[in-house]
Image (cartoon, rainbow, N blue to C red; front, top):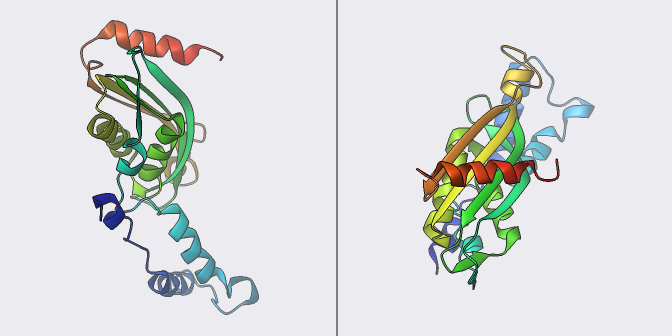
Length: 197
């Protein structure tokens, strides 16, 4: 059995989630038995099974299927939408990820970059950590000459609570390989991001 097959076996415990949600409802002064809330613990358990479906996984299964390619110019996939959950407050953060890499004789199907984002978005997460995890897996499994990952997101922990500043975007960037010290390459990436806007 491959490593990523074992990792996929990590599943949420729906029964525990239902108990926790029932306690939470009681804790905020709600009646878990009232009509509108009777099935809420079960619904939330199913929801967490979906939105935390990346737990214990890597992107190996998506990035290991590669194709030979003589072209070693930059490949960019931009505006990959994602939704994740902040591990500090367990509320959503969401936005877009932009990924570019320089192939080293191999390319990956474009949908696999989006799937790589999903692996790391679908868990309790930090934006900065997610950006690095995406870049590191692309380097590890695709083995390009370099990769750059930029993530821009709005965090509901800043929008609906605390400082309450809707529309504020957080941007994180990670470079690996040839993108680390090549300013011209980074500038090309940012120019390509503007194409079509």
